[in-house]
Image (spheres, rainbow, N blue to C red):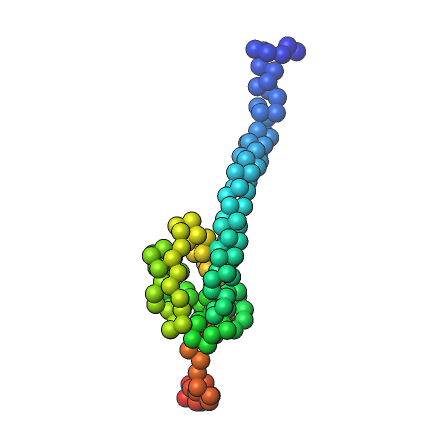
Length: 150
């Protein structure tokens, strides 16, 4: 058998029935390697957002997926998406949040920091039925009265 133009390589692994599965496996491996830096960058952005939120918001807000806010008028950040899309905060974060609870200071963040904050906030959101919104506590006995009507 002669190597080279005789077709030796065509009859090798790439000419066999294994060619398609091997090519698919190689493409999947390449895709996974390419996705890894993207996932790492997203994780880094989320981690940066957590640091920013911890430094600027934790004084009043619960900043994780559990816990109560230190300020009763400051909603836990994990429930923001129950009121509006978290990404809609981007403009307010960049230009200065002047609403919020009465004691909330005005914050203005750089665009990359805004991206990090939004990434973190999106990572901690919980469904409405998973955690009560501590933002508007009910009056004592109110939930029992509603349950008896239902």
